[in-house]
Length: 185
Image (cartoon, rainbow, N blue to C red; front, side):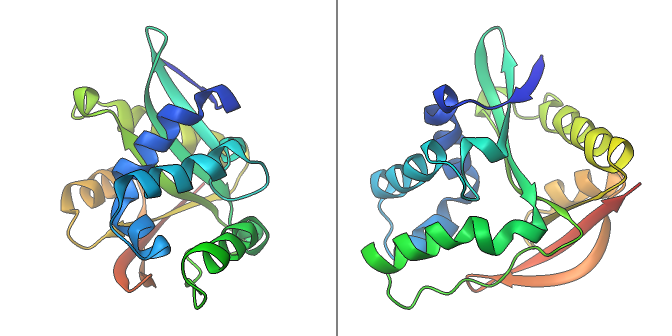
């Protein structure tokens, strides 16, 4: 298993995985439950640079030359800069009143999304990716990793807590209540 920075060539599978993990949030962004439009929306931004969903802010896991997982991660201090093109696009094409809450902040490397191919779920892929990120961002860079997890996703929350993440309270994102977790060195 190889964990590496994503390239623009990885955009198609990244879009599939990110959409798998945050389909309902993207539907709220675009104001409709249309899988193809949601995927096209994500693919547009993944292929583009300097936005929160860009391939520049993704890592992938490869197994036998196939991408089996991805993570979208960026410096929380850059949220407004990275989100600006998305807000502009959504307001122009889907929802003029789009104004999402801040899901992260300065002082935290934010795991926006992590997703694993269904054939590899339950096989430790997410755990290995998270361990890699913890080593890189909290140990090597002496930083803080943060993420949000839905209230109903108890197995995901259990995994994060087992790996050392601590509860920092709750946040709201596009009307959803989420647990905010962090891990520090």
